[in-house]
Amino acid sequence: MEQRPPLPPFTLESARQKVQLAEDAWNSKDPLRVSMAYTPDTIWRNRGQFIHGREKVQEFLQGKWEKELDYVLKKELWSFTGNRIAVRFEYEWHDAAGHWYRSYGNEMWDFDENGLMRERYASINDAPIAESDRRLAR
Image (cartoon, rainbow, N blue to C red):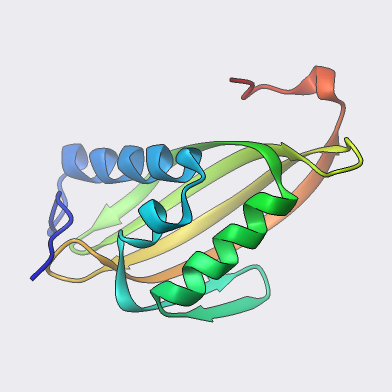
């Protein structure tokens, strides 16, 4: 059985660690690496899209990072209990035309006993920004 520590039930320390691991994986922009943190039958709501399963997550992320260029993400722990974590996040990116955006949102995560995410519900809003207003530049 594959495991993805830290495992629930979460403590403040392990919840923060889980959030940092997620941030690091998403900033890699590697769809396979990111998808391995989710159960094979994971369920997502991302904005208005509904995604089911690791393969669909990989497809979604591949398309995301083809559109959202120079993507940089920051996540913060909002709350946790038992096997659930809530985060707030922001990320910056630009489109092929060079228009920059900061995307803000919240996610609710539900994990199985092996530390794999079963469910991810994300609400996201995009705000146009000037390149000079970037905060998350790497």
